Amino acid sequence: MESSSFLDARESVARLELLALAAETDLQHQAVKKELDRAKATLDQAFSQSSPAEQDQIVHMQNHINHLYDYNL
Image (cartoon, rainbow, N blue to C red; front, side, top):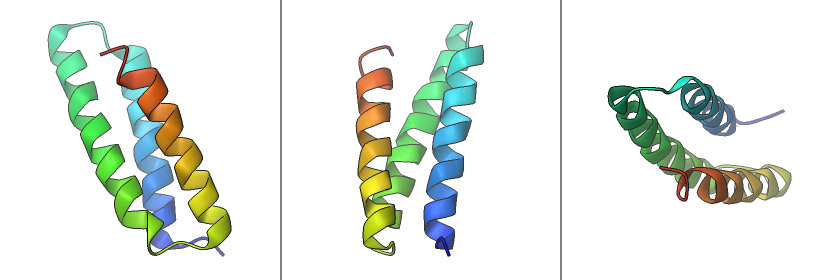
């Protein structure tokens, strides 16, 4: 069973991806940046409370958002 912190982290990354896809205005891009910060913090918090398999997925999600969003914002 997945931990609640891991589920929160997955949901945060999903929100980030949806916001980023829909962002067109400067205000929307600012919201994406805030959600990126939130997603990173949520992933960091979830890591220590997750199983080894979940930790592997968290590392993958962290790498994914770093690669896609840090360079595109």
